[in-house]
Image (cartoon, rainbow, N blue to C red; front, side, top):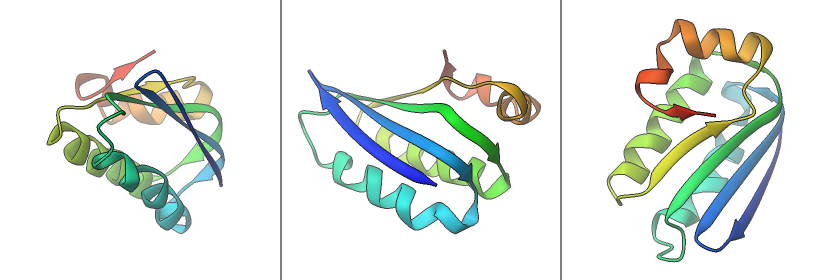
Amino acid sequence: MQTTVRQEAGMTTISLVGRFDFNTHRDFRAAYEPLIADDACRAITVDFSGVNYLDSSALGMLLMLRDKMGGCGKDVVLSGVQGNVRQVLEIANFSKLFRIV
């Protein structure tokens, strides 16, 4: 998976491309950990438009992101969710935990 972080006017977007699974947990964590203490970052959008697969460990990583950012008062939004990825998130009831746009 390829991870890109863009910051603009207090909004940070983490764009993911490829498979989001256990093998990518270090890359994903490395993308969001600096944002925890970054006061300029008020909200995070995880862009899934380039993700074609995710597994249960990816769901766990998203929950970890939500917990860490929620502890700092930062919102997390999931965007660009489509196809099988959307279906997995719906089955896991993630729409109750995240705003999905």
